Length: 118
Length: 107
Image (cartoon, rainbow over all chains, first blue to last red; front, side, top):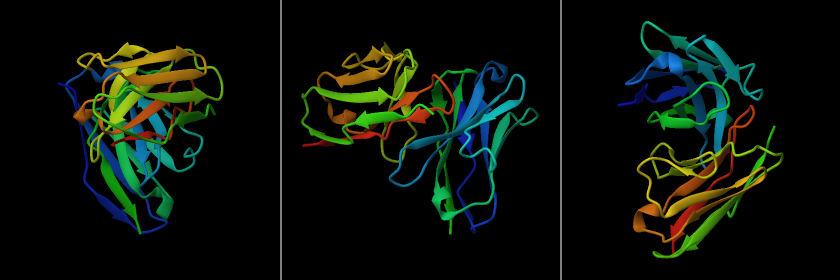
């Protein structure tokens, strides 16, 4: 079955960077895109971007474009999301999720990774 | 960006009640809208896609409708396991935008 298993809790100081991983299994990766979505305490879900696994092409929300990098590691079947210049407002639960490339929604999600900036 | 306005932000209801949640898009998005259910400490679960298509295995008491800018999500007869937070998501254009969520609580 489809599984997206994320890395563990992270704590960072303001100004630092964080890298969160999401290992995929149970589906043909090249058919899909892998998204990153975050949820700050008491806030709505917020889309950061995705990577099209077939062509390794990322797409980012303009809000995060200068701070986020999303990559796919073919050897490890893992997507990584790195967020730089962290501030307290980046404290959130970060999710990876699967969807078809293009304008398609996400159908399966990882368990979430808590990132605390303090 | 296409902004999504979801209402109400919270809703108190009883088991057996019918409830409706609305999402309004700031521009037309065809039927590129989905509804997610999120329970505390869990990832969102997609219930409805293409505005009105029920995900496999989701009970038929859940339904969705709408096209363009106005969308509704209905639970016909609330069950205890339905008390959760519900989000709409527009995926017609980038960036994808979620509604602010509706927290459904037991009266």
